[in-house]
Structures are given as structure tokens and as C-alpha cells.
Length: 351
Image (cartoon, rainbow, N blue to C red; front, side):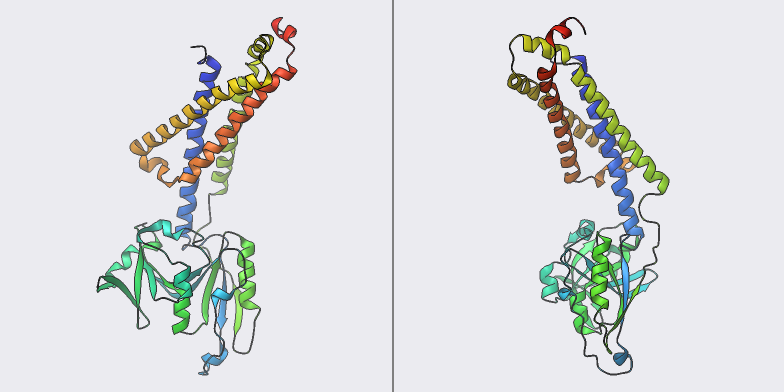
């Protein structure tokens, strides 16, 4: 078949190889970031703290200022954690989030994470790690965790990770603030450092005689993300893959110069050539992507633990497919544009 010429076969093989290569790199990067997040106490690199004190309460005077985390006027998503117990293999935190910013729900093996209704209704709810289960009990078909003389219903259980998440307990912060004082240590986390700063500023700006707040840094347990050398290697590997695809695409386009000249001589229009090569590149795109998925699934089956490919999600494959499709479209447009620039007589003379 003329369709399967060597330049198309080469392009198919190169696309498949580079696609698998980039996805393996991406899986490694996601896995390293996830492990760092868990090793860093379930905090991102943007986390910052605030110490809230109530001098009157510490002197035995009832407090008149209450903290309502749901009233913080910051438009972007963030999470707030209040330290309750942080000793050895026991972590108990109260949490509030405008959203599940760091996808803690993805670590669940059972149940769900907190939602807006839990915070709004100040429900007695908890999400616990796998090692915390012996401290819970079942009553009337529901599992409970006890804290501060209250029974918190366990609505979610984290899967085993081999890290501190296994012995962590998260309580509904909006409920905890109903039952005990608001002073203590809080940590604010978000995808953006600016969002964290805005939330901290909102917590610290309303200083009064019975509400004092001071910014405190978080001491990271580990360095966040890839090491400088690993990060450099990762960037250069991705750039190498991209450069490789650029060269392959240029080779494919230039190889069509003679063919396009003949097709133009035979009366094919710009639209005809656009349609013809559009069909070819679509077929190659579909075949390459299917081959990439096949390779990834085979690698998951035979080298599951080595490549950490289980960390890849649907969005990663969608982005890969989108990039491949965009490259295919650009190649078709560039080939079709040869009809406007090609000198038929010169090409036929081999110039």
C-alpha cells in the first residue's frame, strides 16, 4: 500500500515512542510529587501558619470573639488545618476547605471526604487513616471516632500509604470550633502562594484585645518536589522528546514536497490536499494513540511497580491526545500550504 510509505511509518513509530516516553516521565513526576506531599505532612510547598491566641481566655475570662473560617473573603480555593494532636504516630487535625484542593479524596479506600454541607451544617464528621480504625467503633451500623467527649461519625477511610496519612485523623473544623476555643495553631494551604498570603492576612488583620494572631512558618519535613538535578534531567528529557517530534514532523512535511507538486499539477486544489492529508494524519493519530495506550497497559501489567504508571489519570491521557491531535493538524496545514509555495517546474527538475 502506498499509504504506508516509510516517512509515515517512521512518523508513527516516533510518535508512539515519544508519547510513551513522555507519559512515563509524567507518571514519575506525579508519583514523586505525591510522595513528597505525603512525606511533608500532607502539606504543599505553599503552606504557612498562624498562631491565634486569646489572652482573656488564657486568664480564665470567657472569649467574646469566635473564628468563622467560612467567612474568609478569599475567592480562590484554600484549606485550613487546626493542630489538635501532633505526637509521634498520632495526628489529629481539624480541617476546612473551600474545595478538596489537594485531592485528599483520591487517597480514600472507602467513603468520602468532607463537602460544603458538612462545613455549613457543622456536622460531627471525621475521615481517618487505616491505622486509626482500631480506635473507632461501630454503633447502629455507623462507625464513630471519639474526640473531646464527642462522637464523630467516620464518613471516610484513607487507604494504606505507608506514610503519616495512615495514622492521621481529620475532623470537621467548623464543628470543632463550636465545641472548643478558637485559639491554637492553624496552617493554611493552597495551590497558589498568593492565596495562602491572602487568607493569612484575613486571619491576622482583625487584632483586638481578645484576638491576637501571629504568622508562623511551617518547618518542612522534607524538601518539596524533585531534587534540582532530577528536575533538570526531567526538563531536558521532555525538551528532547519535543525536539525529536519537531524534527520528525519537519522531515514528514518536506518529504511531501514532490508529491504535492505532482498532485497540484494533476489539478488538486488546496482544499483537496487538505482533505486528503487530513484523513491520513487522522488515521496515523488514531493508530499512534491506540499503540501508546496498548504499550502503557502492557507496562502496567508487567512492570507495574517500576514505572508508577497507575498515577496517570484520564486528564493526562486527554492532554496527550490533544497535543498529538494539534501536531497532526499543524502538519496537515503545513503540507497543504506547500501548494501555495511549491514551484512545480523546479520540483520536477529536482531542485
